[in-house]
Amino acid sequence: MNERILSPLLLMAANVFMTFAWYGHLKFKGAPLRWVILASWGIALFEYCLQVPANRIGSNVYSAPQLKGMQEIITLLVFAVFSTWYLGQPLKWNHWAGFAMIVVAGWLIFLD
Figure 1: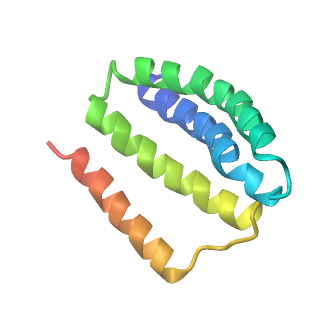
Figure 2: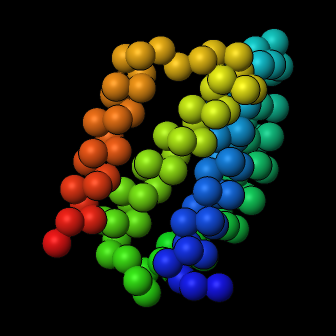
């Protein structure tokens, strides 16, 4: 598969795991913190197994700042879906406005 496409796809998959690792436990606030931390680390292992190859492959066609900018935008998109679907906390207009500003920043990173 093309490196320009494979890298963002791997970043997207990695972000799904990381979003669950960071925020999935919020539905289980009664769970002991030590178990939540261990579960989050276990989930994050899968994120790293996708994130590291995504950046390695992507570095052949993108600069490190471009990879990071892409990562942030993908993170926001995955989080927006996660927050609404899993946590039941839809984003408000000000969240979308703030995210839009970050997308503009990401776009600027890709300019020559």
